[in-house]
Length: 608
Image (cartoon, rainbow, N blue to C red; front, side, top):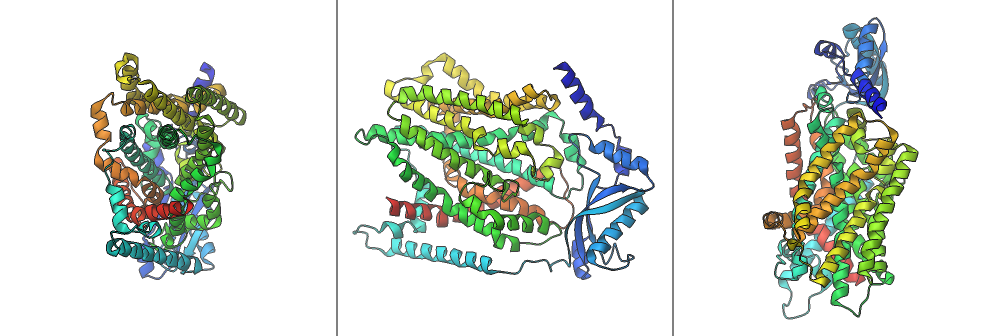
């Protein structure tokens, strides 16, 4: 084990022994000509990637390759350029734009660095503004659907306002009332069932977790942009504070756990309140239809927006590679997203990378519903069965990880891999976005629901137990400590150690989340309970689906419309995060009121 550790440290350090003078002697990783000036001159603007080749300065090429070998370094032997052919390349004989771009860049690197440059990827070559995609049938179809939805909201709202208040309202029309849906969004249910009232902190947990997810995606998007100072991420990568971003992906398991918990808890409460209506597997189709009615309409609408008018929302030198390319991929595989199979079908074609969670959540929802309906009649036995299944799942994941030599996310969160959005990474496809790696969190959510149900039946008072209070107090600090523990994995390469950590990372974090939630629900700490039960969190939590769905579109849009390279720093990325949060919240409100709630209520009124 010690030998593996020493070799790993030496191998990593080998790529870091470059001083500042040598670093700045290398060609810039990213550079962009003035896009707006090129547009004014009506010149051709080309964006592409070049591979550095030997010419007269073999030592500099060695420095580039030597530096790029480090784990947390970008591949500086591939440089990325945006050039205006009418200015920077005006002395190159004009042939085709591609040939001119290639020869121009090769001449520049030879003259400035003594290195050749071979064009490997051409993103585009055209006049700024001329690359706008024409409005097509797909775009117009989405526009007509949007107008129809708005019309239905107008009709539903008018019906609500002017209807005869004495008669029985039409459920299908009332579903589209903006007034009624606003009342649903802002409703206060504190005076209802105390068992449900105890779950109010869930809203705060969901809202705060979503803020962390958006922050992580802001960092990810910066890695894919053209950076003025890529060394910011290269220097930050090995440091301990960066671990919270590199290893904080387990926070998404909070959503998986809460989703399965709420499903099981509501089913068990309904069963307890209606003894004659026992849980049965025959109820599965109904609950699946309700889930699809809850998720799919808004999901399909956002997919439609991403494949149509999102591409027309701006322009810039990186608009084509960041936005147009993503929209094109979504047009090619939207049906896999709609059927919730995109993590198995064409998994390397990234269409809105964050959507993997909805797919995994839906897949695990089916499993969770089946288990709850089968075990609901025997809640005490169910708790043991679920915990046993969780342990078996962890063991199975360890076997999969070890056999296929997969890695935990903390080892994948390195600049070059993040820049390419994990394309081609087996560990991302068959571990991170695979349902089996999130299954322990779903099973823990079910177990927590059965535990609380048994507690209610027995009159168990959790606050009276010292060991429970101690576990609860430790749980939240332990989450931060567990995430930070991933720092040690950066220097470990032994297959058994890597596999064990990858198999345990998410389950351990999920256990800590479950303990914290258990304490919140039992009001062990009233200060935390009051903070997480704030009315503002309740409203934001109810809009969590549209916020989650739409935020990535704004994340990319804010970067793609910039006409120069992006400076990476704590404040720049923080500003990008806050702007994304603001825009996402603003867009989520109409999405929630005009599409999510109306479509859900309308479909549920039909199926019921």
